[in-house]
Length: 118
Image 1: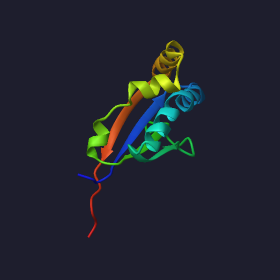
Image 2: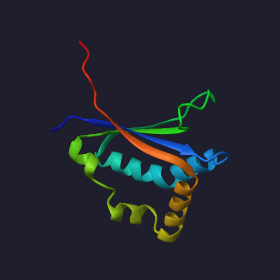
Image 3: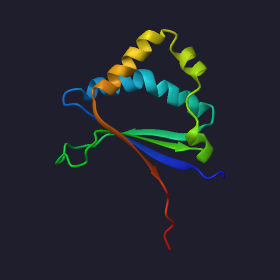
């Protein structure tokens, strides 16, 4: 199957930790996603945040959208050698990634299935 698959990744950070979470994401996770996009696993990666505070019912404050090239690429994981190449100081990388998840209240993934309209 060669149909692309879009997945939305939602993150709710603990109060007061939004900027720290985004900084850690951009430092440690974005380069991995960018490298995998360059390798062809993804066709696009986007990040969005709500523009206004709103009423809080959205339940998330960061959304990352990844369009995978096909269903088989969604099951793949980042090649450990890629992560080792990008982050030679694995102890720091693991500690910062642990911190990124420590300051989350919630995280969930939503795989979207496009529905054709008549």
